[in-house]
Image (cartoon, rainbow, N blue to C red; front, side, top):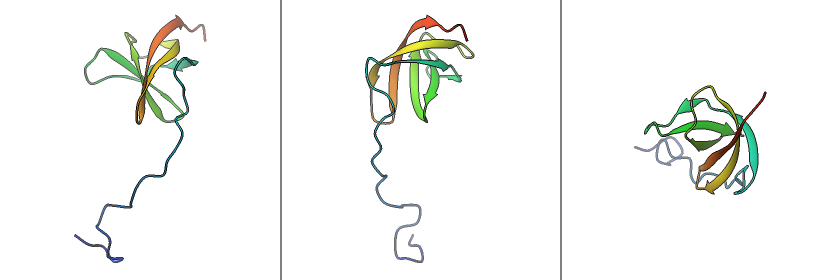
Length: 84
């Protein structure tokens, strides 16, 4: 299906390249917003980037360390419970 400009509808071209806001080994204080679909991790966001935190529960305020960085996501482990 073509739009008015002759491009395919719903396709705006490649997404602009953005540097990830985190790096492996860095630590952050985050709040766990939701659970992963598999239920084995909590989900937090750092500047919009989804971060899967192993063994975290929804509502926890934790200090995490980034262990893996992927395309559009990161994985982390809990370093300590935050006192915030």
